[in-house]
Image 1 (cartoon, rainbow, N blue to C red):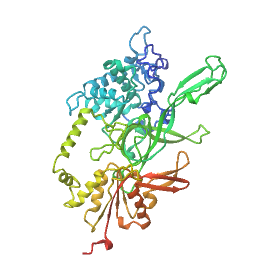
Image 2: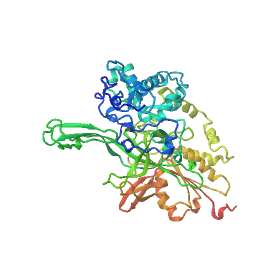
Image 3: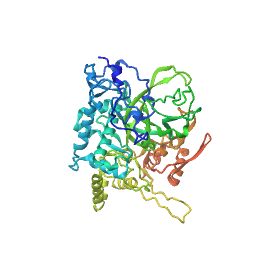
Image 4: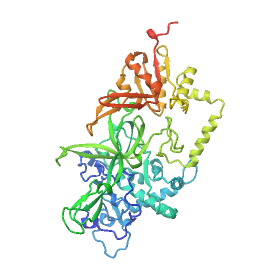
Length: 582
């Protein structure tokens, strides 16, 4: 039966959690933001999306002013008895509204979801330690005064596959429920820190299915997806309004209006003097959060033959701003959204063509088959420090890993073991492999106070010169896959502009901006250049500044700047006349 609108908007006399102690500062989940995907204009039902066996959710169920009150106040939470066809509701019922609420358009019970997640949080045992994982992780997070907790979806899938399915198909509704459960667990286990602690947000990662950018289609809209790619562009940090502050020009009465599904409704009448259209916005007293736009491009190994790489626009918010930088290979976990395109900014008419993007929930840089260059556990003064912790490892697991590395360092044969592990499919070439190992580990950057130079580079540059067919290109490919950052390019297909930076017009603002080239994208990594002898002399001269000064100087189209290019260059070339003359 069709839901009764009077029942679906019924007010709750006992909200689950009051939002007053924490305020509106909870801004680290994209379901809270004024993103285009959270606007009331939803994606029309296409035949393909209707054919999905999972019921779709037409609108976002959680608004910023209701994130902490997931009772029946939200118009998307309807009584479960109504959903089952019982249209009568007794006025004398004393049942908790949350226990009778379901997510709009589904049979997912809010109370059952909360019970399942709390059960998973308390009882999931880590195989590596044999102890409950997440209670210990929450304890460490509270000690470090962090604002988010990472949830490994692989663990959730192994513990409760049905809860994992609900999370994937209804992330905008389930994730705020998880946030509220974490808040209740803190009140239960750490009552002394419950009032002073900022709300901890759940960040999900490691989905069982990582999609290619080409596989994203309309049936994935408003679901949780995971994609892999390389960051090629980062915008500046822009303010995103979370709540607006209005003041009456007649009597001075003030009113604060939070964002609601991407819109802020200006009060038409003053609540004090009843004068119409007398409210004006006071920008200095509005609350904002950080927002950043990233461009993610497909990695070369995932591009089909004869195709050009696809790009996806992603939005990061709050703590995730400035986590990913151009050149990083990342795994993005977020909510796939769609927004309609307007004919012009002055008209409300919209095109039938929609733009798609991803609201980011988690950014993961470290993979099992690649070196990791950043760590949130190191000293803040270190060049490898990052403020964002992307894993769910507790301190005991991290200490075990450090102990393993120390034991390896004390092994007298460690040099030979590492050499045998580097490109094991290539026979011999021991001296070449040892030299590449030294380049991968790098030297130590030195600073001398009495010297005129501030920094002496520790990066090592290598040129492999040999006959054709001696596995030079294979070594370059292996190093490219192993290094945490880096670009693989060919000398014949590279230009001076492609290696340094070029000027282009920003599609969003229309301003002239710099796009990073291969050397700048390889900052803190290795740039692999094949066919170095085929490169033109003018292009090769660009590398002199990079190898010695570790910078790239640009003066183009009125833009004068110096970009960091702290990269090691690994190049391969053939000798004169293609063979060594002995």
